[in-house]
Amino acid sequence: MAGSYELKKAKNGEFFFNLLAGNGQNILTSEMYSSKSAAMNGSASVQANCAEDGQYECKTSSNDKPFFVLKAKNHQVIGQSQMYESESGCENGMQSVKNHGGTTQINDLSET
Image (cartoon, rainbow, N blue to C red):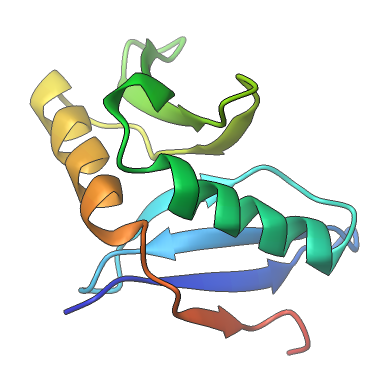
């Protein structure tokens, strides 16, 4: 199954998106954007950058859980993964973003 993006509006009025794998699991959450169009541009940036290994950065949280960020060419963070239990889980998450990030399927839930 193909992945998809979900565009949402936060309680504070800002917009964000989640990249979902084909099974519906959230594999990447965007930064907050001040407008819907900026969030749409963010998802386009994921589509443009997700296939390139050099755009990913592995990190470790304060509680020693691995996670990754996906960056645009200007080094700005586009999105962040969940926290993983292992390095291999983090690697699998990056591969999932590479596999599903190119989708053009966007479900706009920002009006609900």
